[in-house]
Image 1 (cartoon, helix red, strand yellow):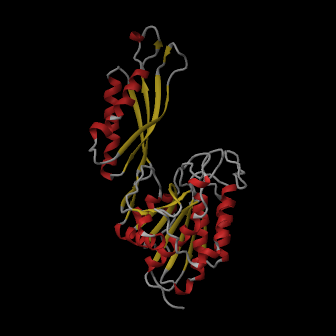
Image 2: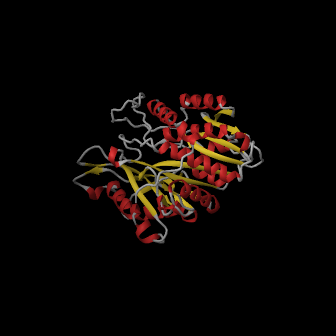
Image 3: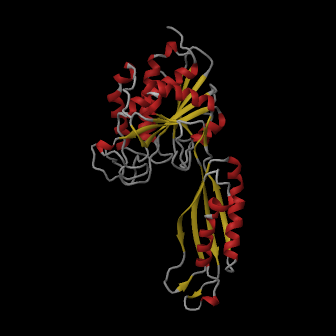
Amino acid sequence: MPARPPDVSSDVSRIAKDLTAWRRDFHAHPEMAFRETRTAGAVARRLRALGYEVREGVAKTGVVAVLRGNGKKTVGLRADMDALPIEELERKPYKSTNRGVMHACGHDGHTAMMLGVAEVLAGRRKRLAGNVKLIFQPAEESPGGALPMIKAGALRNPAVDEIFGLHLWADFPVGRLGVRPGPLLAAADKFEIVVTGKGGHGAAPHQTRDPIVAAAAAVGALQALSSRLVDPLKPIVCSVGRIHGGDAFNVIPDRVEFAGTIRTFDPKLRRRLPAMVREIVGNAVRAYGADFDLKYTMYYPATINDRAMTDVVRGVAAGLVGAGRVDTEVQTLGGEDMSYFLNEVPGCFFFLGCRNEKRGIVAPHHSNRFDIDEAALPLGVEMLVRTAERSLGASKEE
């Protein structure tokens, strides 16, 4: 359906060019996890100029800023700042100047939008019915900056009552948003397995305990997680992304290593998975006389939206772009460490479309050709500003 012209405020329209300039500057100077020193420095300087109480060096490179309004309630807004170890291919004026590092997931846009939110809210400070805390987080891509920021007190002094955040979304065109209560993104876990056997000559496999055949059986057996061992109404994905064994075509090696990821939404199911993987792999490899070691690492939990907070975001989105442009069924097995913040306080994470097929802006996240339609930036600012104001309640007159 055709997009309804969004009802963006004059405060936001006024800084549209600034949003693009900030985003392009961050894009041209991407920084990896816990090394976002240039980005964090630029953010902190801008926030101080706007009159925020600023704390730097939170979980190494994180920035937390507070704008105090006329009330006790505090709403948190979160943006991530880190880039990915990807060499950018597209030739554009704001192409990455840091070789092998690229903003390929939209975090440059998230940071720029949050600076826009900071500017708009600073201009409305006297009529805010409470406080706003802006959380600029490092290391979302890996190894995760949300939990270290929480441990460093990012949600305290003042205590955050509710928290919100957004992610630019390449699957949606500009002008479309996605939000749903409950699980939005999946828990993202990692398994690493070493299969050990007895090597030998490829012409005499009977004299060996072949770890390659055993590992291949284990890889195939793991697919029974989704097809036979888990309730089909509970989504699960098990993908092996790396496997290595042997160095010669005619030699059976002593060991094979493989690793992969498991994605789930259900926390109870997730807790059962290490034991299930151990049993499946053990049965498979021992049938061939081999043995194994398993390392199972639980990374980010599922990103689960509070229902009441989702209603707030959905109402704001419908008012901004029209209810027909708000997808309430969206869900992905990708992971996000916004989940840790949502485990601490009620909140909502949502998607903001940034795709534009007419302009060829169609590359997926984590692609070396990823880009965004910057027309999404003012919409994101408006969404976050309105969400914060609605969450705080009726604003007070100056």
